[in-house]
Amino acid sequence: MNRTIKLLLFSDVFVLTGFGLIDPILAIFIKENLIGGTIFAAGLASTLFLLTKCSIQLPFSRYVDKHDDKQKWLLLGTLFIAMVPFIYIFAQDIKMIYLAQILHGIGSGLAFPTWLGLWSTHLDKKKESFEWSLYSTLTGLGTAATAAIGAALAGFVGFKITFFIVGIMSLMGCFVLLYLNKTRLKSKQITLENYIKKRTDHHHR
Image (cartoon, rainbow, N blue to C red; front, side):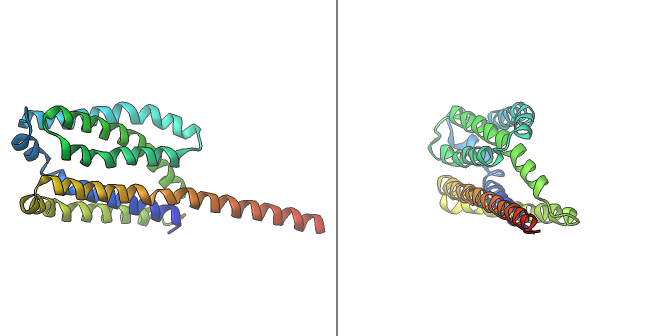
């Protein structure tokens, strides 16, 4: 498994596992702790997230296919996602949750196409099925484990501390992506060195 695939995998494990802590309890938080919070409002918040994500990711994917700046957009999108739990901490009414969900949708709309593009182009040949399965297994197990843990955590330490933990985990996932640029620069350096070596060998012949 190459370095880029590992970094993308670890980043998503941190982010998805983190949000797995709060996804099952968010509707409860909205209903019991916010002004204007209802079950309908919780459903509307999810709708805002999905609509925002879907309206961005398809046209944006056309852009990233034509430009070589996927790492930048992936980092920005993941940073937007990481900000969402911190907005939850300070939310007092449902409007803040709506804002957070729109931000989450923007972040996901930027991150999802770029993550898929980088992942697809760096899969190891003849290991594609294994690496996709490994990704699905690790993120699935992480989300499954945190679903119960998140409910217990919110019950013992409260929603705000739970949101803070998720925010830190998401920022860790974002931090991992900083090493993608180093990986890319190293790859370019190796390619340049190989090119120079070939030119030198050809000249000596």
